[in-house]
Length: 118
Length: 329
Length: 124
Image 1 (cartoon, rainbow over the protein chains, first blue to last red):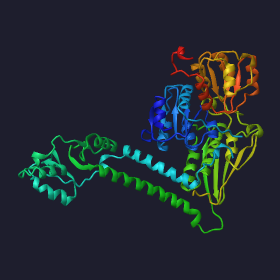
Image 2 (tube, chains in turn yellow, green, blue; image 1 turned 120 degrees about the horizontal axis):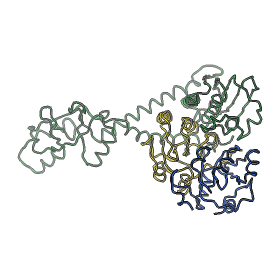
Image 3 (cartoon, each protein chain N blue to C red; image 1 turned 90 degrees about the vertical axis):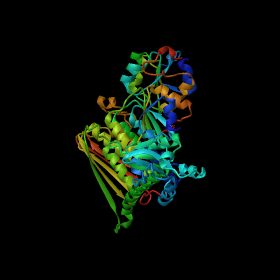
Image 4 (cartoon, rainbow over the protein chains, first blue to last red; image 1 turned 135 degrees about the vertical axis):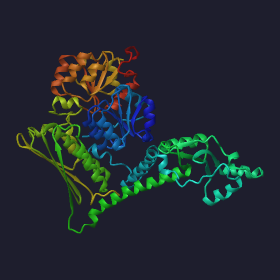
């Protein structure tokens, strides 16, 4: 799903990476704890999260995620914004809660990262 | 190997990298359109004419200078714009000679030099004009002319320059292994991590990742190393007063050694269980401490050895195997 | 919709409070941050999370949630399971990650409201 479709579906605001919305999210994961994201997320995934510290951006960098969408109207701090810009990582923000956001995107065909680690 | 390698992409590493590069180029162009300014791509060598210039003279001007239009200046002021189309229309009408002043477009649409290219692109598509005069915002003076061709040429040039720079960096770094005359070559990188410095957490792993990428190593390997190192770095920050990360890159293998003189791990077996965590509350509040750290490191790597005891500190030795020099492609 | 139906539709494994499956599920809430659930979770919500620490039981009781679904195959810690039994909080486990669990619940008509101060009556 292209990022501008994600933006539409979630009525999201673009915090950074306005020129990068033609990027493609190959799957999505929703989490407020980053360890699971590092374990399960694959390159090209969209991360939905309510966590707003710079570690979220670092996690996205390490895991090669395509973009981050903050839910529940959360706003990332200055350092996170700065890091995201230097990484050329798009940041979106929706006022919808996590449950609703994931539900809508899933309904539009975006898949989760369904592969367990054993 | 677990999820850190993912399914190691169905396409061959070569194909995958080529697609990545292509995607990056397209995205880069879009970015540049927003980043670059009109005055970076416009022609500064502006040919101008005057209102009293005869239309018959335009032919030579256009042909001689190979341009398709020119701003019309009255002394210092921009009073109009005259195009090749205007000239052809005049020719077609077979009128007597007249002056530019009577045929020019006076409602001059112009752009400021400091506007981003995306404005120019929009104006071109909205207006259907072939060129815009470019005016300096501060002085109000004509400083150049911009055509669609200028935009394309400017973007291509910048793309090429950026791409070339990246290539040079990659090339230079990647050759290290090939050009060095020795039985074996090892590259070592060292990082110091400060404890509790949550804001800067991940900086070392980020630097390592970029360095490994510029060495031209397999992206999948780079990813595994980055994730494992990041988890180790975060552990240093959360549980200790700090420590060091030493990375060795050699033929067939990357070794990451993480050392600290912190409290040590009392129960290593438990610590390796997913979900187990002794993270303090402030860490959980920050969204960490769900206990996947060591487990993630183990899943990403080919070997993990933990040397730790309470009071003794901890040393993690994480090994990643690569094929040959592990170079991409 | 009853919890029992959700369990069977999503093939969840019930770990605690098996007697509570006749409960009605109002909506869904997904978050791994306790303070957030307490602040924004609604009575009767089904909570989707990967947290397995015993604090989740306290939060579920306090907020009067319908139950907790753990994702990525996570199992509740022993202390968590014990506490959940004594407080009658159903804890269920799914092998799927949060995104997919939420997606499936959403398909069943369990929605998550529109924004943190959405009108509760809008939920099924």
